[in-house]
Length: 360
Length: 80
Image (cartoon, rainbow over all chains, first blue to last red; front, side, top):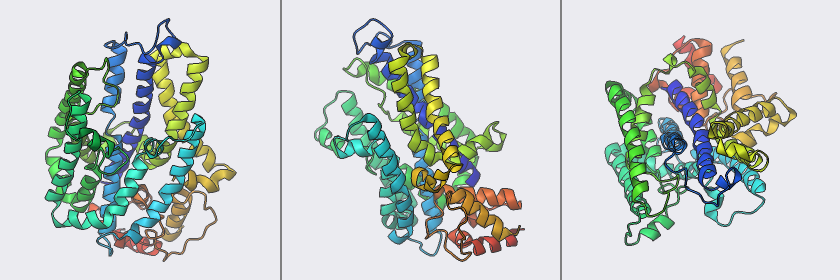
């Protein structure tokens, strides 16, 4: 299963710049339209165009990335829990936390340096690289959640599933314009960088998967074709849900971040299918395994790379914003291969000694 | 090159990038020193399988088999 987890990490990290590039694409479509057309912005003339649908599909279907990383991290906690320190004490996770903090600081400073301003609040500071704060919180919670996962894993997973769906339900209704008593408060205290905020289920799932790997793998193998079918059906449903919610929402456009309920089932089916997929039959399997092993560095560096290229295109080649076949692939290339190139350059230069500090 | 040296080279070159020339104590815990994280354990296992031609079973992925270079070496020898 280890190679498949690296493969999953590779697919997940490949999807991250797709998600970011398609978000920029949607922004260029509606908010920067005046850079390539003689219109006032925001302009929603292209809402419902083939480009809009393609970008939305790319964005919605690439949402399994962070859940995938969380499952892998949960598997690592399970690995630690199978040793002498069965409940995974804080002392065991502190070395890992210490290695996560410097790269997080480095890339956050770079990001705000590029924006040439300071974050306005803690949310803005932690949100772009929210996976790192999430991971640190889960590591800090390890001494509490590992024994609970051991004691009754079904109840443990049910708790986190209910927690995730409850907060999502409030967010869902809010996005549809339905007022929920206390809803604003719930949303205010559940940002995505807090462990319970948007995806509390996936790391606990990875932990349980790691503690009962053989049992889960047997189950997943038996139901492999069902998980593949589920991935396709729920992937499609999550798109339908998005477009229906968009039509109900009182705003002209619901925005790129809407997440429906089908999305969870899509992510769950996709992850379980990928965990038993014979990745060796996949043509670029080796590349994905290799990229997967460098996923943290790519995750951290992709945001500034995409930002720099997006600013360049906005200022100097604004016509590209209207040609999404050029714009989005250019941003993706910058966000994916830029970090890989930078990592290679640092590894092979006198800066090598800073590699772990910068890329984790 | 023996198993220990191969493992040490992989760990220093790939998992501890930038620590070239660093000499790892073969009895030093790779887990409590923070060398092994979620991706590092996966990379280490993939390396062991490719380099030494052994299969690391899922139930063998426990700290008792990957704590130190000496322990990993004993594990690999037992699997060969």
